[in-house]
Amino acid sequence: MNKISDLFFNKGCLLNLKKENKKKINFSKIKEIFRSKGIIIFRNINLNKNNLISFTDNFSHSYANDAARRSKRFGSDFIRNVDSGNQKIDLHSEASFSPSCPEIIWFYCVKPAKKSGKTLLCDGVSLWNSLNLETKNFFLSNQISYKLKIPYLEKKIKKSRKKWYLPYEGINNCFVNFKTGEIEIDYNKYAVHKTIMPTRNLAFANHLFISLKSEPQLIRRTLRNNRRIPAKFLKEIYYKAEKNTYKIMLKKNDLIMIDNHRFMHGREEILKTEKRDIINIQTLSSNI
Image: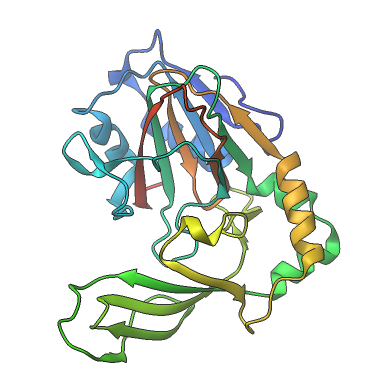
């Protein structure tokens, strides 16, 4: 068991399973490590389409319905490609703009790139600890409001829009639009929250860094009073996030287990001369 990076609070955990009999893995111990570290890289785990989900099942009650734009892999509804293209993807906590925010994100490297497309990882606990007092007080007292249009129904069943209900805290202005086949909501939540760590540290993990253009469901992002986040706070979180981001070139057969409520992830731009193959799984509700 080795550390991943000093940038992470508790440094993360890298488990090299090259000489390990995977049938004897202590899953209870892994859960204990995960609660504290928030991220585990399983190296040389050598999973495949037949046993990948059977491994993640040990930590999952249910899986998230991933974005339809990501194609399915291995004939499974729960295994998908990561976003296509070669562009840089900024830091984000997966689907943290919605009530269906996964608890665990898994990335499995089928084929790594050689020179580009490094994975970006930022521990929200370390990032939060680095922010100044004024910035902390601002985000502790102001919720972020995400305006969403979520595809849900077949279009044009009826030409009407009616009030709707979703059983999640933070939901406001909820409607179903039968003409467009979408659920329309304002979702309000804090950008910082308690983690599953034994010490319940706060983590700054959210959807404030990534462009709205990358999320078709996300229409607008403001404070709950419809005002913009002051530029001085945005400037600080961007700067501190960059300082706290670790870049890693994944190796073949690496499996990364990420606490999505604590860590943000992204990727560097991939050179057009290179290709990489990484798949992802999203645990909506974990048993950790």
